[in-house]
Length: 303
Image (cartoon, rainbow, N blue to C red):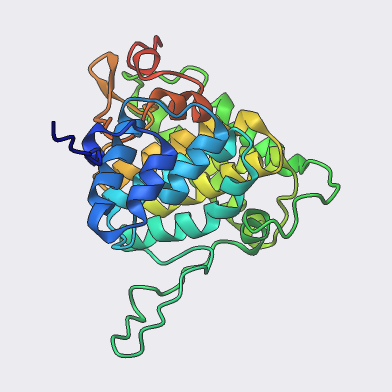
């Protein structure tokens, strides 16, 4: 009898899906596509549950081409992990945020990305549009443990912003809408001055300022709201994660991309409708970490 010995080689699609396996596959050019597919499957099927797993997935997620679909997933994983307390994710946030800004044709905000190929200079693509100095300092962990007192003026601006929205309805009168918008303009003007002077110091200051910028009008207003809310989270204010997700969603919609977490609605007659959303490569573990709701809960939000 002739006995044949076989060496079993398990195809990548039959290997047990795990971060370790995905990392191993991604490390080799011949299997990198399979590694990315496995990583995508882990995210899509919501199999990553801990801050460490989300942070690792964010670090592994390929975004070398700086395409929007690559950078959003990488950033969302990193943001969720940071909101869950991952120190590694917090360190990674500035660089991944800059990647996302470049992917939507905006200047990088934290100054982490550099183009080193002298044969193909790309000064425009990697140009900087720096965030306020006090924001950069918090994102880069240069000033996270400085004792401070909440800014009373910022709190007053926030209170006024919320007061005018107590009876916000889809069918508001034109006068009420006009008064609200004009008040927003005045509050926005002042909070910009305060931000420029670096007078936001506490987690609550940054959260309050985020809500003011959230009621701006343009992409960069909402991007700034997001940066401010992340500052608040990094300073230990976990409550600010919701406005981090809401400002991110509004920023995406302002650039004509679907929202991702599920915080934005629009008025249709006398009721609110859930705005367009892309649910690919994002899951409820991320949503709960950031906006504290599942997709189903967001869709069924009652007003």
